[in-house]
Length: 99
Picture (cartoon, helix red, strand yellow):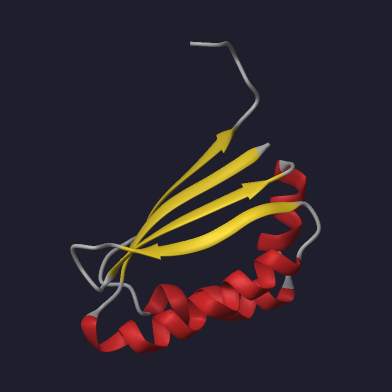
């Protein structure tokens, strides 16, 4: 499995469009082969803060999605609405051991 987790902070004036773009990004992501989960969550503390969680069956499946024409159109506009650089982390979710 391959996981993506990110924090995004949009500008107050860009929030409406950011929410529209997040809906489109999720729609595209959920239609891709190899996706298990794909969602943005709004922070209870700020209407401009969002958490992204993606669970892919493989890094290759994620890469196909992220390099798609649809994402090439959506992501630049979405990132242009951010108040700061996003904080995104990627994880190889192969079980390394049990706690």
